[in-house]
Length: 331
Image 1 (cartoon, rainbow, N blue to C red):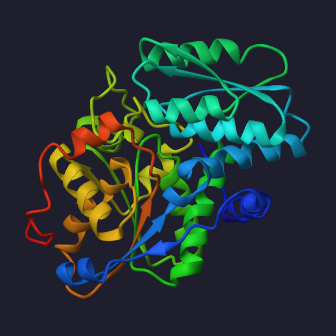
Image 2 (cartoon, rainbow, N blue to C red):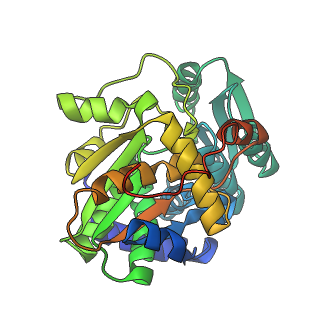
């Protein structure tokens, strides 16, 4: 069970602020007029390493240093954004890092991980990478940095929504993508503390819907194999026991199909003029479904988690033209 409090998120914000970017909140007047609501986007694609993950990684490492638990080497398993974050954070703190990942890791994310000075250990599957990191973590002086299932990681990720809400003021709802659940857990903690009446919602790929299955059954479910979704940042096999209680406390949860993920990735790139990953554009599938049931104009905060996309993924996203169909609440 997670016991992360808003005070933990506030402490994390103070701890990591010298090392990260304060990212902008963007909006599109055109999208607002088409949907009839005010949609605000927290653009973590402008964050160091191109994603929100640096917040959790830095908070965990800096807190470990404060507590004398840092050691000399850190290890992690990741599909990409967490890998870059751990590598970058380790470089800042002067410790070595090894990242375990599957061969299908994004080429862009892998290259950045190596650039930041980490060693990259590739396996045939994510399951094998996870097994390797568990073994490596048993060695003396090694700190294992999970991508989401740790209180310090959750607190760090919560700083993204805390910062966003300080920029936007009160909102009616907050949407965040769900992979392992770290970002949406942190979003829930910050939102509940600042604006308790706001709804907090999660979105995940229909093709990688372990969280939705878990919520339906009340027990954490594990996907049998790596899902082949455009939203690779949400392709985790299962959520964590520390994030799951927060997921159960959400006000809504949406499963988004691949066509809608591609649709909203294209439209957000077009409307906001920024590079956004399918993982976070996916949330708009949930936003539209939620807005269909609202009777008054809503102010919505959407957490855009990152902007690291390689050429192969970009080609898949744009293989069909979705810009011919203008966004509306009828789609």
